[in-house]
Structure formats: C-alpha cells, structure tokens
Length: 354
Ligand code: NAD
Ligand code: DAU
Image 1 (cartoon, protein in one colour):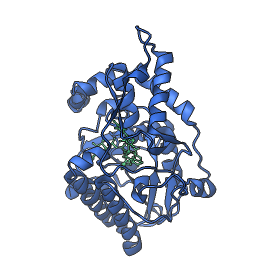
Image 2 (cartoon, protein in one colour):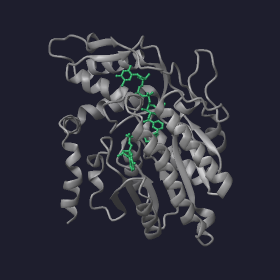
Image 3 (tube, protein in one colour):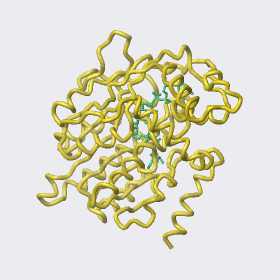
C-alpha cells in the first residue's frame, strides 16, 4: 500500500492513474479538493478495489495519524501543495498553511508512524517529497543548469514555501532518521493540467477565440517535462533512490514562453484550423509582467540518469502534440472546469459508492 497526498491534482492524478494501471499494489489518495483538485480525472478508478479516496486536509494531524495507522503504507508520496505562482503573489496565506504547515504535520505523523514500525517494514519505509526547481531561484542566459548542490534562492511566495518544505523534509531525516527522498522537478505539462498554467491556458483560450496573454517580453525560459515522464521518475526514485538524497528531474527542453505559445498555435492551425482561415497566433497579446518573474529555469538531470538510470522518453515535440491532442479530445473536461461543475464530482463519487 502506498499513501499519496494531492492525487486529485494535475501531477498526482497522472501518477495515481499510471500506478493503478501498472501495479497491483493498492493506493490511498488523500486530497483536500481545493479548486485544483478534480475527481473527474479519476472517474475510471471509482470502483477499483485497489484505490481509496479520502477527502481531507494535510493540516489535520488526527486524520493523518488515523489513516497511516489504519492503512499502514510502505511509503508516503507527498504531491499536495498550493502550486500556482500567480496565486501565491495575490494570496500567500494558503501556500504557507499547506506547503509549510501541511508538510510539517505530514512529516510529524509519518515520523511517529515509522518510528514504531517493526523490521523489516521500518527499513523499507520511504517518505517521498515532490518539489520544484523554483527553489533554486533564477538563472541568467549563460548560467549552468541547476544541480542538486545549487544554493536555495527562492523568489516567489510559492517557491519560498516549497523551499521551506524541502528544508523541513531534510531536517526530519537528519534529526530523526526518517527515510526521506526529495525530487526537484522542472515545469510539467500534459493531460489534466489545470487551465490557469501557461500551456493549458493557451490551448483553452486559443480554442475559445480569447486572447493569449504572454507576460512581459515572453522570453523567459522554462525546462519542460511531459508529466508521464515525471511520474516514471518519481517511481524510480521511490524504488531505488537513496534515503536523504535529492534528485533533480527535468526534460532537457529549455524553451522561451513565446516559443511555447507559437508552437501550440501552429499545432492548432493544423489540427483544428479556424473556419475563417485566420491563424491562432493572431490572438497573442503581450501583457504586464509577473512581479519578481524568474527569468530562466533549467535542470541538470544527470544525477538521476547516472545513479538511477532515468531519462525522459518524450521530446518536447512528441509531448506537446500528445497534450494538444488530449485537450482537443476532452472538451467536456474543459467545460466542466469552466462552469465549475467539476467541483460536484465529490458528490457523484459518493453517490456511485453508496
Ligand atoms: P496541483 O495544484 O494541480 O494539485 C495540487 C493538489 O493538492 C490538488 O488536488 C489539491 O486539492 C491538493 N491539495 C492542496 N492543498 C491541500 C491540503 N492542504 N491537503 C490536501 N490536499 C491538498 O499541483 P501539481 O501541479 O499537480 O503539483 C503537484 C506537486 O508537484 C506540488 O507539490 C508542486 O509543487 C510540485 N511540482 C509541480 C510542477 C508543475 O509543473 N506543475 C513542477 C515541479 C513540481
Ligand atoms: O518550475 C516548476 C514550476 O512550474 C512548478 O513548481 C509550479 O507549480 C508550476 O506552476 C510551474 O510554475 P511556472 O510559474 O513556471 O508556471 P506557469 O505555467 O504559471 O508559467 C510558465 C511561464 O509562462 C512563466 O514564465 C509565466 C508565463 N506565463 C504564465 C501564464 C499563466 C505567461 O506568460 N502567461 C500566462 O498567462
């Protein structure tokens, strides 16, 4: 049994779906179902006996203790977080509560559970913390990509809260011996990505004939990784990573934001040409920059390749095509988010179970 937090979000739901498809081992998913949690992503698992969903908050220590003692997982995989940089700028409070206090509560609960395990379960137990490359701060054009020994220099409330959580995880290993693993990953994209982030927002807005808002000069660089590759990397770290170590995960795919937006537009021109034959890139609109906007992120993912044999399977070209195709094939998923009805899936889910 593995215990996942945040499994109704973008990366978490991809991970949960892949896990249940590939392995017999049961999985329990604890998720608060904030605006970013979408049970519609997981409807295919509704009656699967290997999958259990619990709606709950990381901050609820009593619930965490009860679940860990009841299900006795061999690992905790911690995806749950407030994850959107722009939201953290407008309202940092939830980021502090979930990313810092929530991670602290989960560490405390996991550590208490782990401490009283008998061998060999105790040596086998892992706490895997899913984190971000943003903790390292920003790079100039000529800087080398981030390695695991780069100093932490977070610049946004989001990245500062994730950095704090990474430090807590590290301290619970060094002080209490909790067998932790930390992954710091670059920008993900793929199915079930909430349309507030760059790639899904551009696809959804383009199809709706709306403006494609590019912040500042659009020349900021991100290193893009197809979400399924991230899920495979997390699995590899869980099975073979060394407790106390951190692993950078990235796609070796540095692109400027404007390149990304233009690529999406040209795929849509081909797959869903507009009736008036105009081009999607005519919808591009440069808007005010994000405050404190990090200029460039790039991950050096050679440690995980060298030590654990992981490398991404997708190139950006194959991954972005699959992603656009997924959004074109799932218009109802987009509509349910836009009209808010995705939030009713908790009721539908419980109805289906009773
Ligand atoms: P997301 O925002 O799509 O999903 C977060 C999930 O966590 C949601 O289902 C939400 O309901 C849940 N959640 C939020 N607060 C909670 C709480 N207090 N208790 C329980 N559940 C709660 O996020 P994502 O993009 O899937 O990211 C997952 C993790 O990966 C995060 O830790 C993020 O920092 C990290 N990460 C994301 C990316 C990326 O590009 N998206 C890249 C690197 C690392
Ligand atoms: O690097 C990993 C991080 O990537 C994760 O830790 C975060 O959870 C995830 O949200 C993501 O953060 P970014 O801020 O890089 O992602 P976002 O999709 O919000 O923005 C990507 C880039 O695109 C960034 O430079 C800002 C820009 N942008 C974004 C939006 C939403 C635009 O130009 N216009 C937009 O409308």
